[in-house]
Image (cartoon, rainbow, N blue to C red; front, side, top):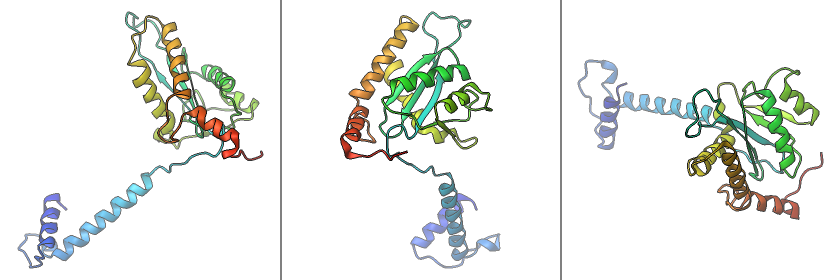
Length: 235
């Protein structure tokens, strides 16, 4: 039904105007028909919204799930098109929001292994689950370098639903934060300087920046857990 027709029906309903109006289409001659049609449309929209809704969740202890993602970084001023662009890699602990980030040369399974190793070294807890999109840098057969690395380190892998990368929203959001608060606010003289400032920002993010969802810094969240306000289940 045309939106203008629905609008007129709603107005007449509010005015208690239930008289029959002339129409070239007999189906639209009663206000009752229009209201029923409107209710059916609203019901369909509600069901569609429920199907598309993404369930929010929070994990119960550090390392239970780490969200990871990558993003291609812009070339620095003066770099030519022949110079390959670097990639930003991030890993975010779901429970504490503790962040690990680094810059690697490409989006490959080998670089993913390097970043996974870096993440394990920098996080002060054991990683149980690695959650990513379905990109080939993370996902493959048992001979895939990153899949093999996860197996060797007793890390399970979970992936976003097919064609639904937004279900990895926590990693995507922290990448957006990094781009806004780190990359766009500095003019880097070199790639080494860009990496050094990234490390400094990550330290600020973990130790000084209050995370809106948890109401404290990631390091405070970890300290709270260690002090016994939360308990890691025995595995």
